[in-house]
Image (cartoon, rainbow, N blue to C red; front, side, top):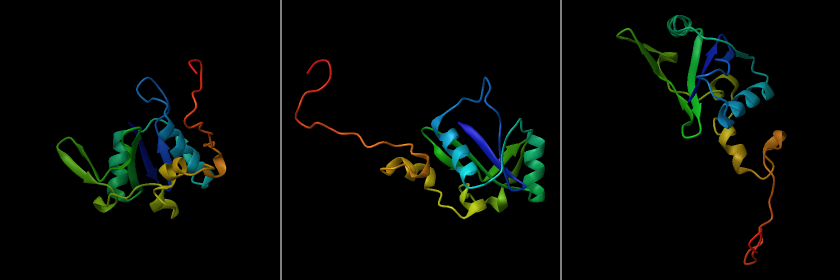
Length: 136
């Protein structure tokens, strides 16, 4: 799972490394954010910055993304025996709260024929009842 933070109106996520893996959902979030003109920064994120932002309000959202989880909001962080709420504990899915866009946009695109402006999907022909491929 990848983690994202909306800090001071900017979508921040750690860069790809040994523990942060590339993935379709992560790429989709970053692509949509850039398409929607949400500033994106891939950089190391310290837990102290996240906790401070949750307390002072500069962290408005946090969410994880992954193949099985799709996009899952984070309502709070637990660190050192203390729980710190994100955005008053509201579990909003980004980037909708920042941009007014539908939280289903990232998964909805995979269900459309055109894939939106990214052209991620293609229509495929299916030969029903006729063998195809090397065995047919």
